[in-house]
Amino acid sequence: MGFFHAMYDDFRGWTGERVWQSLESELRISARHDGHVHLRWDLTNAPYEREHSWSFAVTTQHGAGEDVRRLADGFHHLLA
Image 1 (cartoon, rainbow, N blue to C red):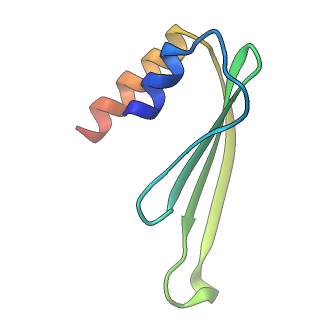
Image 2 (spheres, rainbow, N blue to C red):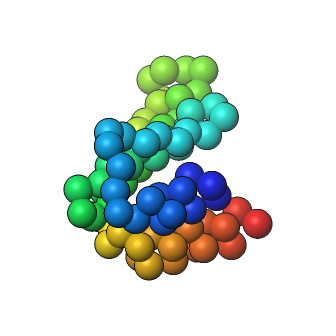
């Protein structure tokens, strides 16, 4: 997944927030860097009937560099 590999390539940091989302916006991942990589994972299920919709969000922290590379490799294997 290019989103994670780009964060690994920029392990020294970047300015602002980077965002990736799935085609139907059911999964959104935002990333920021302050010496560590902070990922906010937003998962949403919004069916046609709004009363049955739900969402879940969690933030994880990863070491820049090898931690993000392992995460990128894991997602590559998961989605392959």
